[in-house]
Structure formats: C-alpha cells, structure tokens
Amino acid sequence: MNFKPLFAEFFGTALLVTAVVGSGIMGSNLSGDLLVALIANTIATVLALGILILTLGPVSGAHFNPVVSMALAIDQRFKAVGVAPYLVAQFAGAIAGAVLANVMFGAEAIQVSSKGMASEGAVIGEVVATAGLVFIILNLIQTKRTELIAVAVPAWIGAGYFFTSSTSFANPAVTVGRIFTDSFAGIGAQSVPSFVIAQLLGAALGIVLAKTLASSKK
Image (cartoon, rainbow, N blue to C red; front, side):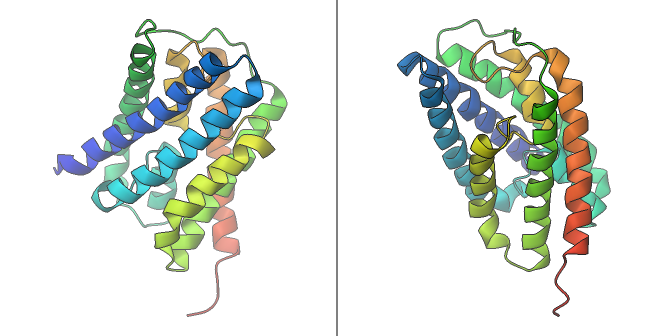
C-alpha cells in the first residue's frame, strides 16, 4: 500500500482543522465581537483550504473530507477500496488538528466543546452546504475543469460561512474534530450525529444534482 496519499490526507485535514480552530481562537482573542471572529475564521479557512488543495491535490486528490471520498467512489472516480483508509486518515487528522490549535494558543490539548444542541436550521444548512460542495466538485470533474477546484471549493465554503446558519463546514471529519476544542469553532458532541446525517444526505443530493445537470456535450 502507498502510504503517501494517506499521510497527505491526514496532514491536509489536520492543517485544515488547525486553520479553522486556530483562526476562531485568534478572532475571539482579538475582539469580543462575533463578527470579527467569524470574518477571521472565514478568511483563514478559505485561504488554507485553497493552498492545501493546490499543494496536496497531486498527492492524494486533496479530499480532506469523508463525503468527498465517498461521492467520488460512488461516481466511480475513486477506488472503493481506498475509501476506508482515507476516512481513517481524515478523521485522525481532524482530531489532531484541533489538538494542535488548542496547544498553539496555550490551552489544554484535549478539550470537549461545551456547546449545546444545534438548531434544526443549522442541520438544514449542512444539507445545503454539503450538497453544493459535492455538486461543484463532481461538476468540475465532469466538465474537465479540475484546475478550478482549488478556487471553487474554498469560494463555496467561504460563501457558506455567511449564507448558511451552520457556517458551512460540510465535512464529517471536521465536524468530529471540532468536538475536541471548547472554543469559538467548537461543536457540541450531541450535535454531531445530526450534522453527519445532514452531510450524508447533502452528499447524496449533490451526486444526484451532478448527474441530473451533467453536460450533454461530448
């Protein structure tokens, strides 16, 4: 087995979550204004995600997201046997990234978010965010414009920070990783099952949309 792609998925997901959590902590430290924290969180996430896709894409495909790996396998663009190892690497990387961010800012390494249950609206927001994400990726692959993924995916996630009530993480691994920080970016463990189910539903919807709206041009 080639472990280089697996390490790239672990490393990329870890740095992505470090950016998400770390920028949330920095934003909160800079100002008590939630808008400042959200803007800092958005900018750091968008920039980090774009850079990680550009640099690690040639190594592993830069999925950094279980639903992306599964969607690509369902669409027969990724080997099904590779899904489980990718998922392990992504979830492990997400947890490691949250721990790293905690440590960088002088907090306890292992924390558990104290946030309560997410609203129904936030769960619906994750369906929308994930559906859009999967549709964009599959559409760009179908239309042979994969070079735009490094721009389009961060753009969608960045926009989703402000137009979805969940702030658009659209990623089960990131969702689980954010349990392990009791900071601005933390997610209460009790919300995780609802979010993950919403993300899986959104991914399924994204696959259907990509197939339905696939270009007929050869």
